[in-house]
Length: 164
Length: 123
Image 1 (cartoon, one colour):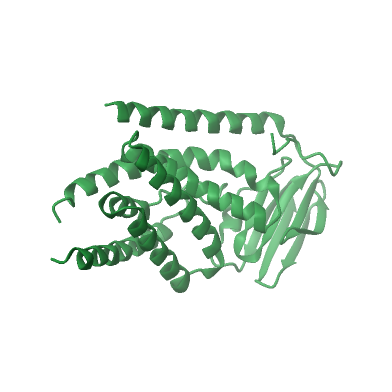
Image 2: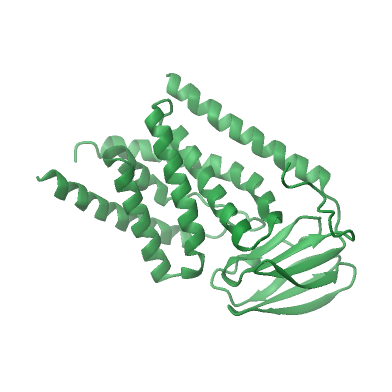
């Protein structure tokens, strides 16, 4: 098949799966309600697959499509936070992947923590409140642990999808 | 193999830094005196934590009902889409914060002295 068509199709399918994973995650009860923002980050599993298969540009495209669709379907008011988190997370993941010093697990751990950091930074900026920065300590712990899980899952999936 | 080692180092460093920061915050932060309500970064109200009260925070986005009881502040009700602020556990230590992103509302605990945040957040 034409490579370009294949890539575009792949981005489309991954975007759709990412939206579904976001939705599933939305339905799950909060893990630790004292601190908002703790989540596993399920969509990142497929974003990582895309990052490894077709590179940062394709991963960014799917990530952006997911954010837009989630904002339109459910909650546009937090779009800017999600966007900041996703952008910072993807940038750092792409850079770490480029160094070739980490496996998917390391890449996704950094991605998880950076996603939280991006959101907190925008929240501090928009709400002009530095105090919420203390959330970052807890989010860094949860983001790291979630990143380990997502990295392992992402590596499995990347391996399985290699032949397609 | 060395990739796995790098993964483990990265994970361990992040976890240690986060746990250390959290412990530092927990030990340095003290009980606060006021619950301060900020809307889009601007202080609109403050309530002493030792007086039980209920206050409806009205914003362009909707309403959040703030309750002060037993020296702690929490959000009882809100009409925001996610309800994260309502799920939040009550706060009483300096610097602890409840946030409602959809409404741009922040409730944070402060002490008598305006400049005393309990912990220098920049450090």
